[in-house]
Length: 342
Ligand SMILES: [Zn+2]
Image (cartoon, rainbow, N blue to C red):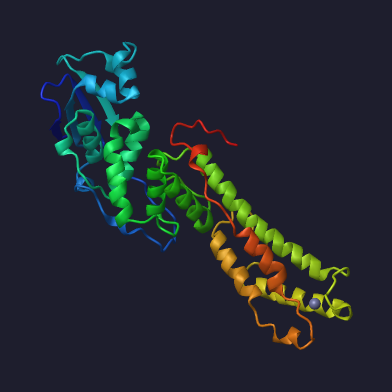
């Protein structure tokens, strides 16, 4: 076991001991997924290369911790907590696990007003690691001047991705913790539209109810398109089907029933009906399949001197269903799960 010491306060009365610093932050586990984030291979400060047996000691002041974070206040001010008692060395000892060493160093430097030690720019990866700590220690306000600056700079360099990937989930976490309503709406919308299966939180502070809302909206969006396809298969099959030109009622229904069935068969949407959680099928992939089906050539029907089309039935319905919104941030929370399952 080796120890590394960060002296943050010159007269420390507290040792914050980080055991087993994280080596597996926000792991992206989608099997067979070919879309990787560029940052997937980036490690911060070479920490990952070290043995997890290392212990990091931060020498800090209990007063600064208590002022900055209600969670530290509860630990240190309440004698019922083991952390609220001094150890044999005369200092308070607080053990933590799984945090990132550099991210913890950044927030402790801010707590202790050591602003010269605080980086002016951060990569998305580090900001997400800090967001995890901010959520846990409930200290967003203390960091606000810095977090505003980091986010402002990050926005110029790294857009919210427009595909479902690890970086998207990191942005979603950062947006949620630092209450960035625009980025949150965009990130959740991309997740809803592009996730090819149930959406995972990757262990980030995204509450189960928020993940549930994302999944529910994704499932509903896909289900509505599936139901539209079913409905039009039924309509074209029905003896009640009406063409614009009455004498073609049968021919028109038969033609579009066949065209829609063949289109769905060719795109693996028929005969097997996909069901929630629609593993392997994103809303966007389904939408593209249906757009392809309705865009088929119409030369045959045009020779009948009438203008029915899949575009005006299935196509129009699907266009309307594609108007999806992301989630509103005021209905969502981080680890603290106060937003219910509504
Ligand atoms: Zn017709």
